[in-house]
Amino acid sequence: MALAVPAALTDADHNLRDGPLPVPLELLLPTLGVRAPVAGVGITATNVMDAPTGPAGDPVWQQAFWYRGSAVPGDLSTALIAGHVNGPRGSGGVFAHLSDLERGDPIVVHDTRSGLDVRFSVTGSETYSLDEAADPAVLARIYGSGPVAGTGPQPSADGRSHLTLITCAGTFRDGTHDHRLVVYATRSD
Image 1: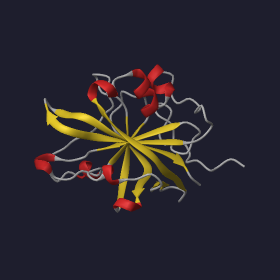
Image 2: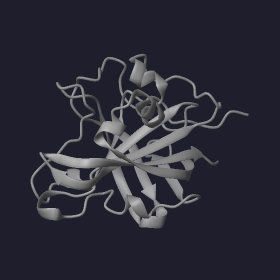
Image 3: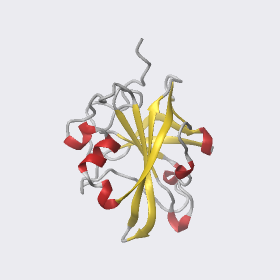
């Protein structure tokens, strides 16, 4: 029996160059006490995944960002959700404590339309330098092979649903952090 998956999260006429769009999802990280609204993001003019920002106090710092070029969470592919580690003046972002997640910790993607909870379990985490994170093999692990090849989400090789959470890590220099923290999870329900 196939597991339930949220219905399409955006209209088919939206492309990856469109700005952030509302999507009917919430991200729950029970171990960390996080319950965050999710926006759908694409890519910027410089071909990097969008990570919206705003002034201090803007709710964007406590929001998660589902990459619209990845799978719908729960599909037999890889879905990617990002979040800020911190905001202006060092305030904590939604993923401020992402590094505290451990193998087996739950992650829930909640569809606010239907009430469906898609449950994942953390399988591991890695910290990559910016150079490592740009390696095609690492990108394929983070995003799934399809988005890296420009073909959109593709079925996972193991036939399972995967979720990747990503945030900045390391030292802030030249306008960004010098590492990326990636948490990998597999559907558990």
